[in-house]
Amino acid sequence: EKAARNGYTIMTHLYSGMKGVERVNAYRIAGAIEAGLYLDDMYERYKGGMPLVDIATQVTDLMVNTKTPELDYSVLGDYEKAKEHLLIRLVGVEENDHWLDDKVWMRMGDFAKVIYMDFGEFDNGLMSAAVSSSHLALMGVTKEEMFADAQKNLEQKEYSFTHILSMISDMATEMDMDDIQIPEGGPSMFILTNKNKIYGASMIARNDVLKKIGDKLGEDYFVLPSSIHEV
Image 1: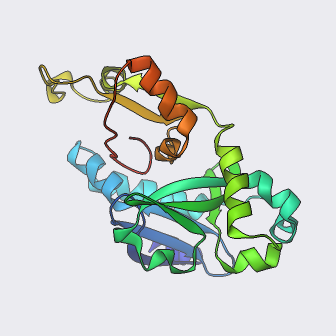
Image 2 (image 1 turned 180 degrees about the vertical axis):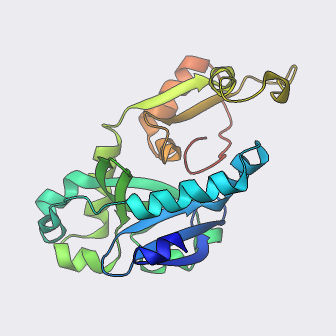
């Protein structure tokens, strides 16, 4: 209701991920801004003890205070500029078959490599947009050319490869140690993501990274996708 008074329309739908998850979208009626809020993340906060009223306050404050960043929209019609912003993200194919209908994507096993335009970080978060198939004609480029440029950009991004215990150690600062269970025995587990840990699962689309991991481990390994942000 608070968001609605400030010119927003609220709607809920299933959004792409390694599996379909519910998301709340808040649209500014007189503009193109969209704030995407994942309900599964909110539910985890609720289970962690955060009062529901505090979660709702955070959500509405984000919607109301989100401002449209200043962007150079001319890049949308100039591929030489646009290609510098192209990146690849991974989503599950089966869970997102309808969403993928008008997107620029390629299959990689059970996943879809989807082309996004990444405009960088702003005060209220990341600004990005999935590239639709109609953009190919607008920019005068083929799907293969666009993927080649997006792959080049992806390979310039920093990646993070750490033991899972390092992540558990970081989590311990926010969780009660009694809630953390460390399994005994079994194979070692590691986390692969990108520097800012957002949409980092795309790093498995880099053969150079996969080879470096194999060289480091000195043996074959399994990749276990856990979310669109890490594997």
